[in-house]
Image 1 (cartoon, helix red, strand yellow):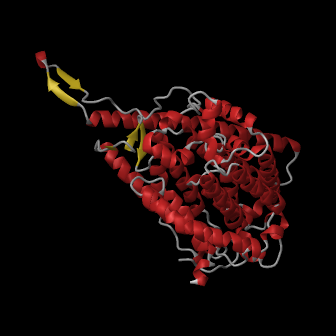
Image 2: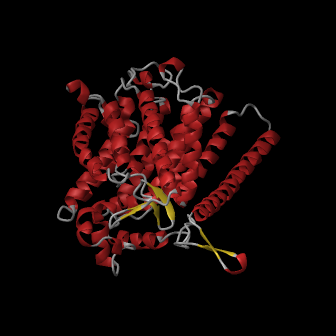
Image 3: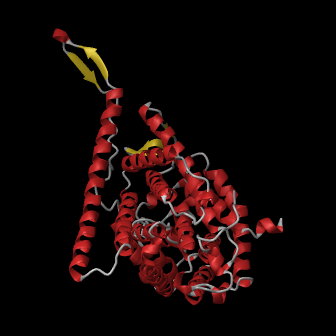
Length: 486
């Protein structure tokens, strides 16, 4: 039993997958219930990594990480009479992100390459099958609607079996990213260690998930998708460089910019084509043809056609209003913030009718989930409001110092990473930081999005970022043999 409790690899895989299933219809409640024992397990592993593996002095930039975590605890204590339980739960989630996911390299015996391989394979199979089922229901005009959820089609957008179209889009992007990783030739130095994934699964998964990404009409997810492709093209430019002269560098730079522009244009074009094509196909399958006078046939549409486009015509979808209101709250608590649990409650103190979309939380639902689900839809502003200027400064120092070291590692590695998955991890992380400008995606949220970011970041740190060569750290390289989790 103790051996199982000390196996943080099993915990990370279980925690990521459990949070994923909180996004799936009818599985939300069981998944959230499973999070309770997993949270207790995570607290144990956090304490172990801090004390036994001395994260306070061996973890990269530990000073800034501990400072940020300390500010969050202080904020929860200052507001102890206002949603203290929720703030403590967010605090626990933050500790798990820093010391169990980001601090994976401290442990010295983790089979890290098998963690990402296991999660990639499970999500490839699960999400693809879910999307196939959802597309089948879409073609057969099967949907489900009640007071709590709208499945298959929600607000004229494809959502499938996920509780929200944006979550469906994010899951599809994650699978596309994993397909790219699984396709890489040099996932490990010994190919026989990891079983191959069928090309049929890779190709069909790629097609299905890109199609569902387009149909869910999630602009934030599309930004993540585009960002990943563009940053990856840029990393190829960096890693393939040799001793070019100035003219060659200029030509390659403009070629990269042109490639990025073409990716953007082609992606939006393909999204429009897919939306119009699927809309026409569904409408055609539901048309009723009746004979009219003089042998003229009349086509009757039994219901309004689904176009897979936002009903909300404004580009920001209300985010600008949220950000302005968030800064109003910040102006009253600028030092250490208010904590995530108080966003909705405190908004009623300073804003008429509360935060934008506060009307969505009413009745019994509000008492149970509103404090968790209310968000500003910008990870950086969320940190600023919840942790104050002190916490925001500490986190940004931690983030920038990590970002500098990771980017330097990529530059120094040159062509040695061409067939490795590190450029994929790097590209996704950079794209995700842009995605976080539009979603609750880095901290202060107990969600699949948040934990997935830290999962990927932790995998990158196992490469020995910033020249970490402490005892046993080199055993965590993806190029080293590790125990098989399967």
